[in-house]
Image (tube, rainbow, N blue to C red):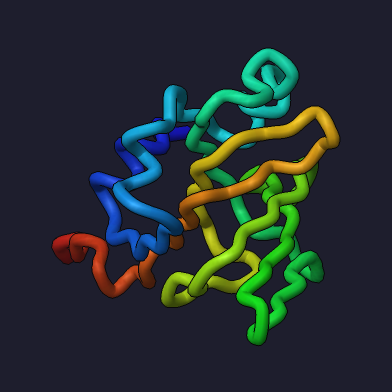
Length: 131
């Protein structure tokens, strides 16, 4: 699995962030969801960036309050952590989409995202030459 920072650099990402400045200025670790799950208690309260996939049938969106709740699962669609976010949804956010969340994990078992980034469609990826 590629490091989340490298994923963001090699693919197009759509970013939405709350507040002043970029949340990545406050993030101290870049982890896959599996790495995060094995260390979540150790990083609780710290700013982290976690890459995973939005689990099927987990998205709850309130357009009037801009509140979002979903489960961030591993790339096979299992395991994961509940995520909350308040703000405008990034383009292409959907269940089954690869995402990166930046924020903090609380001891109540919920990851509170300040920033939410989604992978852009494959049309932005380099074309493989035909042989």
